[in-house]
Image (cartoon, rainbow, N blue to C red; front, side):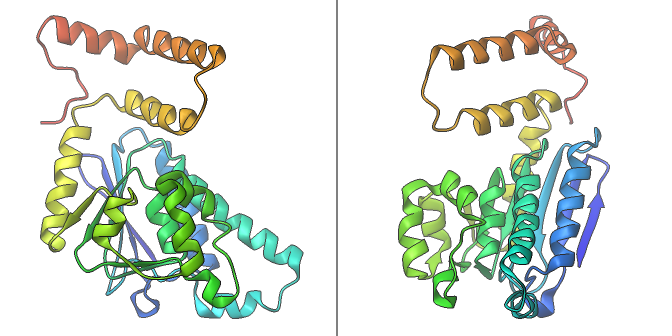
Length: 259
């Protein structure tokens, strides 16, 4: 259902492995993703996490059997179930490690939410994205904060029309960063990102990610500026900060750099 591996360079790979269901979500897959991202977020040796899907599609969103069962639940039961999905998305979005997503095939509904929660994304040419909820009489409510945070006002069109959009369109609106010709080209893009992440201080990367999340769309107030000053002061006196500055001044190489 969710395959996991970690290589000797600290790259964790999580693979959605329900190819017969186009990697659609059910309660078990949601729980597995939540657990994996929560756990890996705190593993010191992990430098980055790659999320991909086995088979013909990255993720087709909600599993039909799961949706069929939910139709018979009470509103309170559905709310609790939706919160578990939201908790999974938050675990990915707030993970202290850089999260890279590789999208292919069909990326539908909640699958788009997964892509939106990643820090970096590459889509293989031919990938088809769709926020299809309104065609089912539903809305993309649970994934909407994460999708809107990623693509902004562009979300309005796709939420309302449920029309498909291409990898190039996804890149243009900022849902993914790159479009690759095929799987090998996508791996080359991922390798390029990993090489750069491997040059950076792990705790500084986590703190920089937190900056992007905390300060997005915030007004530049005196309080916010004071917060930024506190954060950089803490980094300057941190072990990483001292090691990094000393290495730079002495033209040396910090211990975290991966060759």
